[in-house]
Length: 408
Ligand SMILES: Cc1ncc(COP(=O)(O)O)c(C=O)c1O
View 1 (cartoon, helix red, strand yellow):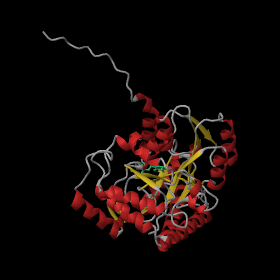
View 2 (cartoon, helix red, strand yellow):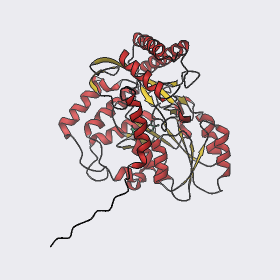
View 3 (cartoon, rainbow, N blue to C red):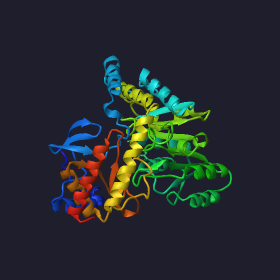
View 4 (cartoon, rainbow, N blue to C red):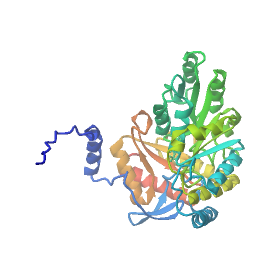
């Protein structure tokens, strides 16, 4: 005889997401296309793709330096795939370190002129791993309140006390630092460019204050690597404090044009992190093709001065043009390759997003909790491969869509 099981009614663990489901349903019920479900049917270049059957200008990728279609980057990846196969099937500390993992770390050391480089499977994992491993129980992490989710998740994974301070506020950082008990381990975590508004951190002052108060400093340069600074090393380079930063975090998923994350440092004990950093140890290493493409891209970015200059030109033109049209922008001046256009609310933002898509322009729709102060944003991220004509075309599209939706 078999026992019959009378299942108890489970508590639905997904019911906590009901408000999100409702907001989404309301949005779609208004007939707006789902802004979080767009498919690129074909990618034609770093700045153009076919979306919904239409040739679309891409103004919402992180392909700042346009390296995704660079012939050398593609050729390096193809050759490594032929020679080493499709994947590594193992952790970096076991069978997952191939020639190209070593080579990309060498490329990073050269790029930053630093002693050590450690590559992770994503930038998310780099923050998760480095932050949680550096700052543990009894230590303090002092971070900008608008920090990226991967920074917060790194804090949650380690067990340090987390002390947020007001966004980009130098005095608030100093006040927080002064309240931390004498002798405690302190890690100040900053970003070069904040990805939602595209604004830059006052790293010169912040790094000085952190050092005066006995803290180590980590700067996430995800959105500045490759573009900002004379050699593209980021905001820390631009503001002359790179030598005082203890750890730089970065990603390959933006200017490098591939996927992967990294940390570079001059700390003499840095290499021990390879043995103790769980998001490095307990996951498979990236495919060699990705590593070879990344190394080729990083080496080319070292000589990307002309591209950087053109990208600045694009950023200035778009910023000025959108202002002149009457749009409200996230920053007074162009500070990076990201220009955030502030929308009155989510509904208008989604309508504007869709109107732009119909015009043949893709931008990112960003909304809380990813954005600061509950804002809905249309985030424009420029590419060094956008031509001056494309930027003018983009401005025309914004003008028509903005007038049709009633935003300008
Ligand atoms: C500031 C910042 N750090 C880290 C990451 C994570 O990078 P990845 O895409 O490589 O996981 C991002 C990605 O959006 C980011 O904006």
